Image 1 (cartoon, rainbow, N blue to C red):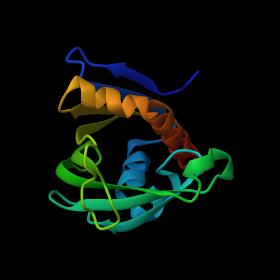
Image 2 (image 1 turned 30 degrees about the horizontal axis):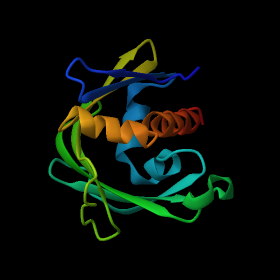
Image 3 (image 1 turned 90 degrees about the vertical axis):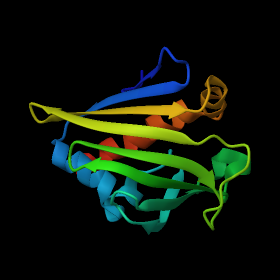
Image 4 (image 1 turned 135 degrees about the vertical axis):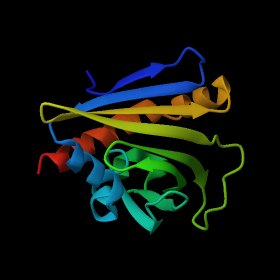
Length: 168
């Protein structure tokens, strides 16, 4: 059973993700805001993340590529999947908003791929931190598209990687 909970919102276009880590909020925040830590855990199993640009401030953006390093993943092996997240409101150590797109290495949006808007919140209780991410898409069909692409499995693996980094 996954340690990550996924719930589709009543509007059918919002995905709510929740995961609790055995780590203080400061450490979870730093893992999201420090590129040297972020590149160590972002992406599913068998993938490595390169950060082309990261300006962690309101209005700044993060441009990243995830490269498949696992030969067992067949046709994905050696391919790079690019994304770009533009940061909205940032409340240090508590929450951040960002809009994420699929793109190419130059940051040009990929046609026919959904854009998402996420609000991430961190809540600490007794040295444990709960990560809550509410991601909204333009339509239920757009959410369905990313779910069919394996978003739940990939993000669950990504958060497993985060847990491993936080435990060090």
